[in-house]
Image (cartoon, one colour):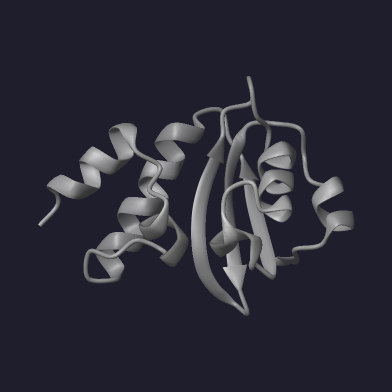
Amino acid sequence: MPILFTDANVALSPQANGVYRLYRNGTLIYIGKADGTLSTIRTRLQAHRRGDEGQCTKSATEFDYEISTNSEADEAVLLINYSAANNGKLPECNEICPTGGMIDSTLRRSP
């Protein structure tokens, strides 16, 4: 169940690697990852709250997360599954600011 996207709730999120999802009024708008080395779930969520990643994700109202040992692969699976279920589209904020790398090229090859 999504958690309200407040500074207090973000401060309680883990300092670990994993994947996270941002929602606006219950609609999934962004899927992201934290690799646990230079960024954690908490630091990534804090960056989105501050608007460092753009206005689209700053407007999120809820979030959730999963701790993961392979956040890049888990993010790719979440994005591919979302895209497959939504006529090839990514969540709104991923479309505006794609994550790039393996994930982007995998999705762009999909019909």
